[in-house]
Amino acid sequence: MADFMATIGVSNQNKRPHVVWVEPWAEDFTLLPGEELEIRASSTLSQPWFHVVEFDGHTQVYIETINATYEVLQHGNPLQCGHNRQSAVDAGLDL
Image 1 (cartoon, rainbow, N blue to C red):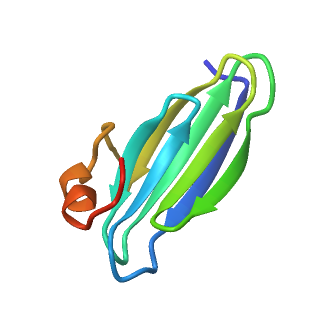
Image 2 (image 1 turned 30 degrees about the horizontal axis):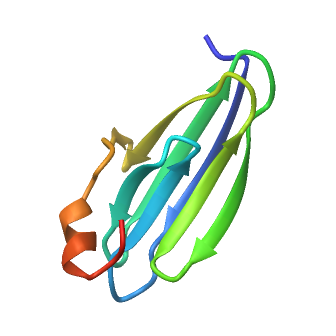
């Protein structure tokens, strides 16, 4: 069981899909307009924290800690890497 946990939410208020990258794993999750997700990081060694980098059409969320594990949730349901990826491709976003 993790001793340390942190959660960050990401919302897409744009009119087109938006890709959220979880780093350093380079896993992608695409949010459609009006959608949001949560990233929950945990570690047994130190308190996780997040470094967020914004780009046009993309957000990189770096999980900063040692020995981190994480999950990405939408409405409490786990998402898999590549969630809505085809929508990002169809919108012309680089992946």
